[in-house]
Length: 90
View 1: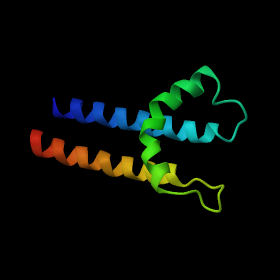
View 2: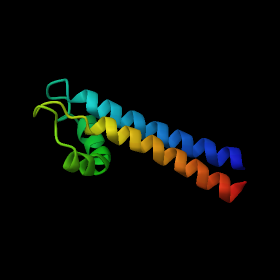
View 3: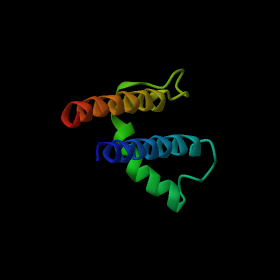
């Protein structure tokens, strides 16, 4: 039972990590964010990225490093969830 819960949590975090990564990479290609997939990813990812963009300004007005920080925080949150699950289920 414990392994299944951890496996599901790991899968969900991985999926969201790759959703953010794909969404960020889509910004390099013209008009891709206006596609159905781009709009769907935007609706799922932008609420998470928005607070980071609000507090981390772009470097030299062009380079947005907020997604990198957001992915790092997502990894920390994943480790925190594992610690909580370990405490509750262990």
